[in-house]
Amino acid sequence: MAVGNINELPENILLELFTHVPARQLLLRCRLVCSLWRDLIDLVTLWKRKCLREGFITKDWDQPVADWKVFYFLRSLHKNLLHNPCAEEGFEFWSLDVNGGDEWKVEELSGDQRQEFPNDQVKKYFVTSYYTCLKSQVVDLKAEGYWEELMDTTRPDIEVKDWFTARPDCGSKYQLCVQLLSSAHAPLGTFQPDPATIQQKSDAKWREVSHTFSNYPPGVRYIWFQHGGVDTHYWAGWYGPRVTNSSITIGPPLP
Image 1 (cartoon, one colour):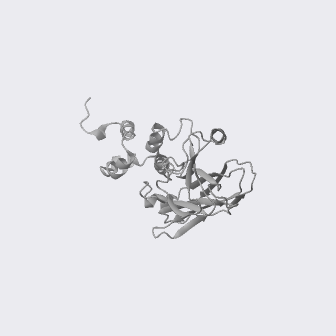
Image 2 (spheres, rainbow, N blue to C red):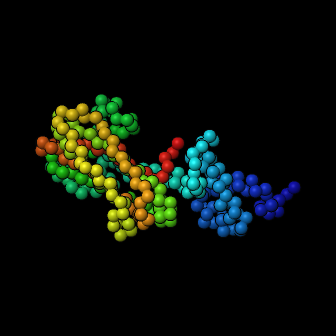
Image 3 (cartoon, rainbow, N blue to C red):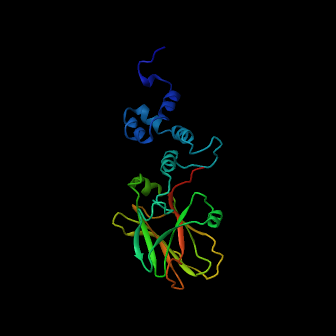
């Protein structure tokens, strides 16, 4: 029998149709059409189906989710918010805040280093010199898709990671500072571990440093990330710490 009005379709069919509509269109347009559509779009079932369709969860997913709609958006936005973390584009997107000694430089991982690094997609790193070298990025959360209500109401976990190492023949000191900033760039949260000093004749293994911001105050609009260091023997050239594969991610990781 022909259907004269789309709302005469069974609700399960309407739900299936909605799973194919972009999420923002569902909320900004479709939800405003009528009370039936509003109620269907607010159903947990719809957002769970969309998560499954997009590959954000598996069919046997058994972890608790407080809000499937928020979960969907956090999954869809999930990515590394730092641009050019592995020096593939030189110093593009980075601000060279302190450029001492022979200044920052980009080098390629050697064959042995590639075997030792846990991510085989990483080919390059940034290297510091004999006076302090620091570089930074500022992440604009709104520009990356994280609207104010999402950040202030949900306050999803913000995970920061960085990788660093030293040369085996020269000591070095590595440092990192990450701040959550308000719209006025006032700090709302800070992660600044003690500088890591690596002694001369070390194993030169890559080390990971990580931190998760949780339960931070509302109002976070930017994230400032700065790292770098200096060699402790003041040798001309590039004997300071190497850094690469830095990342800032928000919300639950992809399965």
